[in-house]
Image (cartoon, rainbow, N blue to C red; front, side):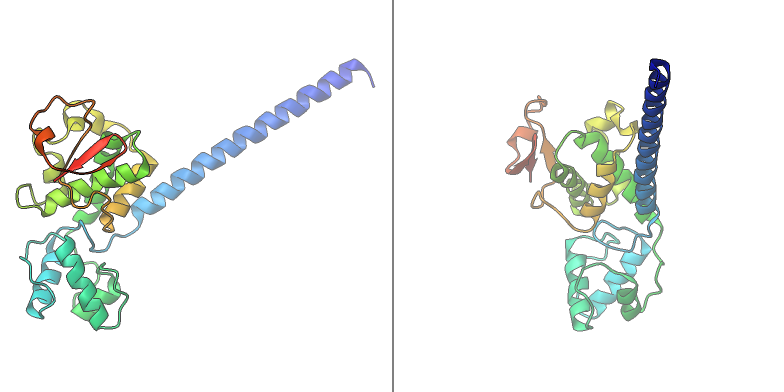
Length: 234
């Protein structure tokens, strides 16, 4: 076989391999995108971090029946989660603390009566996690999401995710524009985990990077734990 034909075959093989690699890369990217879009479009039930009229109705009914002893605020926090778990145990349901369709049916509420804040909260929570915790370990991203949700439930902060995120001076990502950058896939997963009740901070309402802040006041807050580069405080 002549050298000309061999060279032609080598070139053809290299081109074919390159085309295969490009096809695999496109397929992988499309699969990842589809996975994220699927999660984004997944209906969100009332659960830890949710707000709205459905949460108010859940709290009021559980309070009337003796399962919930907290204030009726419309904010689905740890007290509401525990109350829902008690109700679920008493009615033979999986004690997840999430007001799913079966739980809402037992409570006497039609599924899907929430105010629609859940989806927007999910996106905004993922956005602030991505902006504030980019480069942090995954558990550190969940922790930042948990701090936002802990503030929603705390009386010293606004009672909604958007109110907490956009509270003046609360997050540097708002002032330096990082809030507008593309949201990472891990931030979406971290937001979902935080909304499902995961709180690796142990109830923190503040966090900071000691190597980057000059704020003296934040350094006076009692430290609960350190995750990645962030100190989480009460």
